[in-house]
Length: 185
Image 1 (cartoon, rainbow, N blue to C red):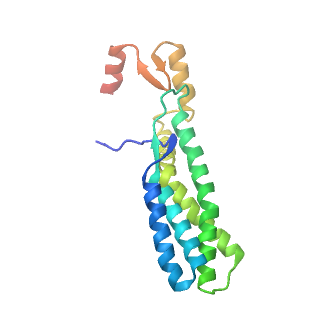
Image 2 (cartoon, one colour; image 1 turned 90 degrees about the vertical axis):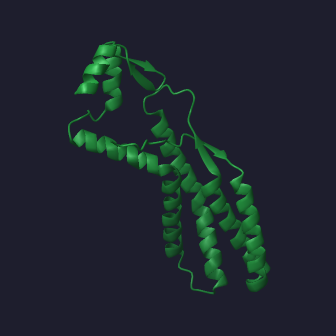
Image 3 (tube, helix red, strand yellow; image 1 turned 60 degrees about the horizontal axis):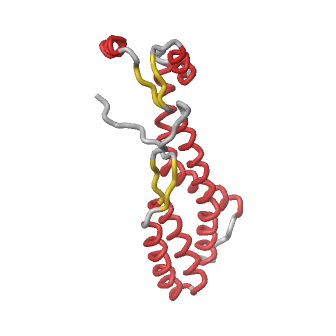
């Protein structure tokens, strides 16, 4: 019925897209610099190229060794926070340089709040969506009384009673008939 799989962002790797985005940012910054001033153009171009490069160039891959049932989600949450913290000063600097170029009044609180919102948007878009999907699914299943809230403890309990077997962070049924019985429910 549902074909969408929640894919966590457990590790971060920089892809080749970041280099091309930085080059694009440098070129666009130089062009903008000829119009508004070289320093401001370079700052704007490099920061915007870095933000776009990070957003498109960071790739997630699955961990090989998972010892805990929630390792993937914990790593995705950590990567969301890391990505947001990296994007925060960059977005604030970018918006500051844009406002400075436009000679607009700079409200520090507004600048920080706007930068924080934009950085959160980047963090959630990149690594936070699987976390939101995971907790939304758990909340719905728990509210419908389909699973206990602490599902990892329940799986550990079933593993201790040899109903299922834990292999790394995954669980498999030991008995085929028991698996068939639950599948038919």
